[in-house]
Image (tube, rainbow, N blue to C red; front, side, top):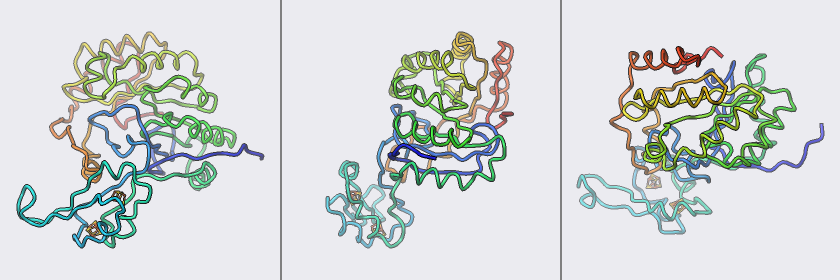
Length: 320
Ligand code: SF4
Ligand code: SF4
């Protein structure tokens, strides 16, 4: 088959054998770049749109080879006594220089694997070849799910990959935060079978406190996708205790979903699985004190959705 000349984009991971992000067994492609910055994000390496440096202090032997290789003088080794706990040597990274680094020379210089790259550029052809290695495991229901990050942050790349898969009869799904211009989303819609559309909070100011953006664009896009997208649309809500689990917010969410004419939501309880990645990226982890909502609260919320005619799937219990 003839294909248009396809370009590439930035991703940070490919994971096979997922059974929670769409029907059947799926291969997930994690895109770089997001217009939100949710404090509970479990994939913080997906927020920045380009590859970035990951530094694992537990593998570092402080020999300074990376500092010698860095053309930007971004690395300083501080001897014991020059850091907060006064006892151990530390490596200080000026990450503002790393964000615009073109070489990442520190990574091959490090012999212990303490320095690594988070994310890489890949051409659609190469990505298609890689993910279709899993084809035999997808069965007749599975396929690919693009996620991130925000997949429509790279609209051409997303559209090209989805179109390529769709024309090869591969089931396609996307998970979107919705905070993205409509023109980024629309070109991909004809090549999608399934969309997970995230809803975090119905109050615009509360939404902005925890994600750095209001929900105005998200709700507008959610309504529009519900009308124009002919595939299956499942709303998704990360349940963060003390943020969005109150009765007022759940009522507002029910009213919104009812207004769209769709009737499915998947609630994902907040967790701490991404904690270690914040340290690798040198980012503060603000959600240390978030608690698991617990089964009682989850079942209560599920009952409220179900009673309102909205099928509510809890966590990984997704009978898709
Ligand atoms: S080269 Fe690797 S092990 Fe050596 S100081 Fe740099 S990060 Fe640490
Ligand atoms: S990413 Fe670039 S600027 Fe940052 S430490 Fe490595 S070589 Fe230096």
